[in-house]
Length: 261
Image 1 (cartoon, rainbow, N blue to C red):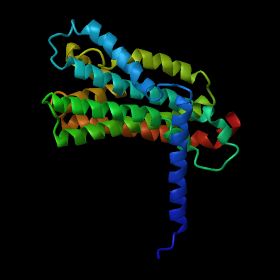
Image 2: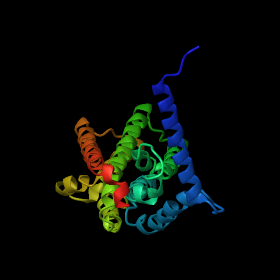
Image 3: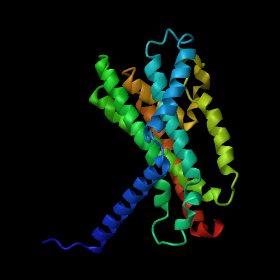
């Protein structure tokens, strides 16, 4: 019989706490709603129908416009929702910081869980739809797409780690970020194909993190084109920079988080 070590017990407790936070977030968000989780899908789908109606005539020559628009909308919606929730993740659950002892970063890391559930359902639906229409992506493409999603998740967590502790000091940060995200919707190639923008300006669009993930995901799933190694290296560099910056900010300001509530 194997004896459980202190590390084993700590690991189990951490996973149990992680699951409890995710489950609680899910229940709180959809408590009292008769459609529950479906509301998370309805908003982007409604936006998709509106944009598809308006822009399908403008980009009629784009054969894959519907799939590209749907994928871009949900990827950007994930980024937008995750970062907005992440900014206030510590403040909203501040009552836990002074009453219990546990890793505070769990409150930040679990904040995008609801948005991630929605994105997972949509991505699976898109892959199934592509397969039914005879445009099934290869296993390699699916694997690389998974890496793109992982990069997006790491980016949002890194941003949330840094912004959550800064928000406790600067309470206007969430309002500023809302404005940036709204403007960023038109910077990322969500509604329009990136090809209509002169190539000399592409670098500036790629500075905005969702641009690379959206564009690479479209190429892999819909257009059956693999981005270059250089492109993936740049995405990895941006992801690492944002995550490490957020982590450093969190480690610097987290010790005084409870005092700033």
